[in-house]
Image 1 (spheres, rainbow, N blue to C red):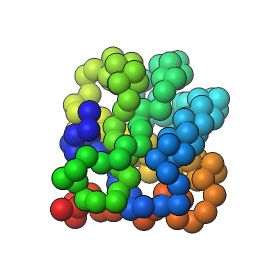
Image 2: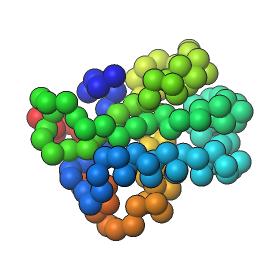
Image 3: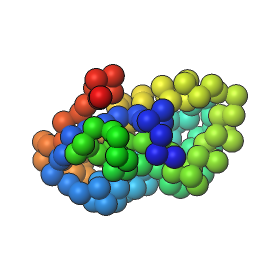
Image 4: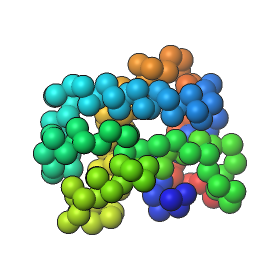
Length: 136
């Protein structure tokens, strides 16, 4: 699962540790699942039913410390935990991998990050975002 092809975003060191970021991400996802408007927005993004979004009890994205060989000192947001992968992939089985990745990036940038910032006070809580194309 720690595969750069599944990388959605990358950040330099911020003010929070990976386990703190993950806990905030899980709380953020729970908040989003509790908001019917957000559920509908996420469902529309993936072309699935809101009830299928609600079944994703784990966030479809997770923070991971990158394996060696990736740029040092970054926290990486990698695509989907295993439990959520099976549910999400079952719901979007006809979607091409690159399309799914693009939708996950959209979910991250447009919905998850703004919602996550409510749980992570401080301007540099996530660290500075890295350009994925310039990460060598």
